[in-house]
Image (tube, rainbow, N blue to C red; front, side):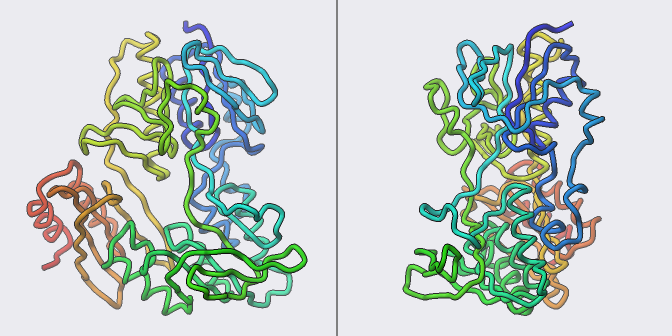
Length: 415
């Protein structure tokens, strides 16, 4: 028997995994799941792929049905925003003024799409973070006339590249603008970035290097964009894929919390006694990498939420388990033009990257990433599942570069 309340703030994949893990771990007290969107928990990776292309409908994205959630006996607060957290009393304040006193709290509020000031209410400006965002852009892409139109995608990171690929395959004129010369270059490096650039060029995407300086409008609708170098681009609509910001505004009033680049946590995903975090918002200390990481990947959201829930229950004495550090091997994937990129480990922040081109026509590559003399991440495109799975072992823990490089070549048959 456990008493009191645990509140999980954030009702996406991480929040859902947390409440399920709490119940599975034996928490029988009150369990509140708070989400600022009105929707039941849904999956986000398909938003920029299957939903945007029209291959999937929104009802396919649900992670659980209402009936499945009922079995968790949740105090479910959808369409509700948390506005503050008092870490001393472990009290969550909601937008309607309600105050929830808790035995423990798990923060899983994720990130918000970054946008530009002064564009509120401008028709034709989109972001792509939520289900409603995706439905708005998908409606435009599938327009009733069926005639191709002009889309400018500002931002050539993962999200921008995936959306550009979908829009081009639907027949629209697409211009992809990014600060980095190569698509996803900041994350995947020059070798894989060049492969992606070739794929986008072959499919007719116009790529420009630059940053957005402003938008042109007429009668409240966007008509184009201006780049910092003076270039003007005509557009019927614009997708702002210029990054995201951790949703930590509601936490900043509590001086006990470090909210710089997400909610800082220790190796147990704890931000303060009884306060844990999981998913895109959590910046936790990864003992294996020896530094704090914040990872915006789907699999990490689920794994970290389960770890945070397990450690919170241990701290509360609800289980006989000891708290355990969260030390995952991060994984992410991206789909563009039928090409699947998959990566293990940590690519961001690498000071060294080496790409092995295995087959240019088949767009098969493998790449190794490292930092401070250690290999930290590996990426592959176009490889069969058996080889992909084998790459995880190459980078399960950061290790000497030369050793990891040799293991990578052995795994993919490269030279």
